Length: 347
Length: 255
Image (tube, each protein chain N blue to C red):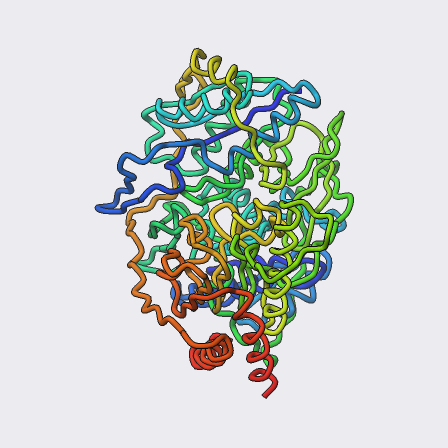
């Protein structure tokens, strides 16, 4: 059997991003539909160990490239490696996870392979011998079935849209080193350093997201420290509210999100924003606290499995999406909710 | 220093989008500059303020896209160019990237091409990278800050793990994210100038290229089924509500 699918494992410092294994699971599945197998590729420091792990997730072969010129992630060189292996294996599908790196590598590799790219798919199947991708477009207001006329199709799969396969420790193999031809002798970009993000769970990979909005600033029971003007007092109140959200997120192993209104009002940094101009997320559980649920916010969280809305305003649009609704003050509900989850999860 | 900002005109983010018979329509909803592209315009105008950069805004689209170009002129861009050609109907991201690369070459002397992170219609997010690959210029994707720009440019790229600090030789392609700073509002004087501006339209023959072959298409489109969520309103004291919610979420097996 030949390899029909090549899956690129996105990684940082030798650790695969969770979406990489989801992509590999999907790639194995599509390869079977095409009557072949899937191969995996890892590039950069730690790539050999990572490639070895790919066998446990169903890869029939695994390639790695660790040339000195690949020590830092740069899209130009990494795309060249991906193109070379895709050509050498003559696959029908090149699959990457939708990550910041995966999306740009897919874009460039599609140019190199003179084919097309279908990024951020939520479904992928073979129908009448053709690879058909399901892509949410117009911020999820439209679902498109997309096809690529040329081969291989280059696709990125949305994080959490496909199940992560369970590793089978008994599946082992020896990864194959790739010698890369044509790496630039004098790179036009130089990576100087990495400034690490604040700790915590990444929103895209989070199983649970507790999100806050403008409503968090309205707690009349709090007395701000003296010396704050009105705007500072509003921010202080909202940040006290976000501390509650963070405690609940910690209990549930989740991440803290926010509406655009809360970010624009400077309650919390932009990195937490969920919505059309923030992150698109699909956790198992999304708890919207004091968020009215504008259509732009819905675009970022609509595909969550179960949505809980806590809002004082019974007419807030967020209740239309919610499986469970609580018409009350966030600061009244969250403390007993944190206690109740702590009790329950301890048991 | 010469910067070209590539923008797209899209239906407003609040538009009701209808998919039927393989077509996507948005009724009489306004067409606007793609919201993510506003940050790319803002980033270029910051370089105009700091380094007297010459900023040209470029779009591929229908004649109506001149309205989006006028918005960019009203924000402070110096010149605008539209590439429009009936042969571009059905163009995919790579076809558009080839057209943009040809237009950037024709403009000439360009030090940097700026893009937004993605357009809110096709949600592809690949055009900056593809244009860079066609031009053979390095890509600096998802740029949040540009702390240095002289004979080289230094940027901070956003990634899952933090910010990667990268230095690049010119010319470069960048995609710009919201952290660069809120986009400025058009000034009254620039709005008047933009309304009077004559925006040239280039055809593919002006660029000296044939229509690039599109590979990707969307033969089927549909509006997602309206979720029939049965909302269950929980009531009682906060303690009672908390106990109910925990029990119900455990039963849903989402934890």
